Amino acid sequence: MANTQGPQGTNDPAGSTQMFRAFVDEGTPQASRPAPAPTGPRLGLIIGIVAAVAIVAAVAWLALK
Image 1 (cartoon, rainbow, N blue to C red):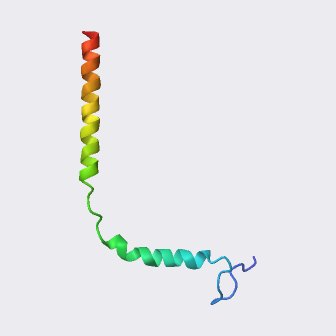
Image 2 (tube, helix red, strand yellow):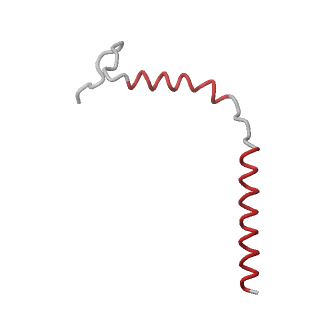
């Protein structure tokens, strides 16, 4: 089996390995912080969906009555 990785200490010609390592090293401190809970837009979305379902149910009830 051939050694396709080359000797240690050489740069990756495409740079993909180095960019991946930089990405992983850069993301480590951010993972330890908890993300803030999105309450504003998400709460509005839930209220909007509940209101839409209630309106559709009321229209269907009136149509079938």
